[in-house]
Amino acid sequence: MGPFDRGLLLLYSLCFTVILGLMLLMCTGWAPALQLAENIFTPERQVIFAAAGIILFVAGLRLMFASIKPGKRMEKVAVIEDNPLGQVRIALTAVESLVSKVVANFTGVREVRPKVLTQADGIAVQVKLVTAPSISIPEVSQEIQQQVKERVLEVTGITVNNVRVVVDNITTAKPRVE
Image (cartoon, rainbow, N blue to C red; front, top):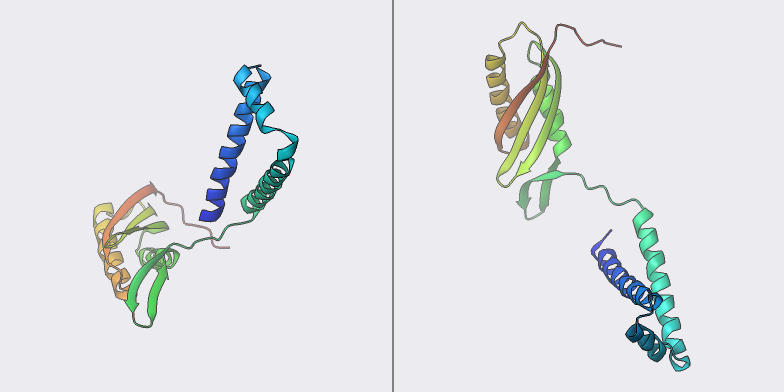
């Protein structure tokens, strides 16, 4: 939903809340609400209420269609460079793919699940791993952090502020190749 539809939804909700509130007050028999209804709903004002009803009906249809149509899927991107010809952007999923390839080359790493988050002056990378018990996790983690930081900067030009390595599991089973 765009800004126009959100504003329309606000006005639509406000109108119906006021109308329903007045109806509830009239149903309870509150004298000022009944008197207000008698003064407002006169035959001379029939055209005004018909126009208001049509506008509310059209607004309701617009909001209904805006709520069911699929929205634009915004791909998260990092801006690498602004130059006179335009912007250079790279999708964060592309950076995640690069990180996966870098980390998968390490001996003893069985599974890699990277996640990239944008920050004001670069990106942060979280790498979840499944490793073999034969490796030294502190040494391999430090090497992974260094190589991910260097390789992402080399390939994309994006500064990696930190690389967080999380070992989810230590397993001896090798993944099946089908």
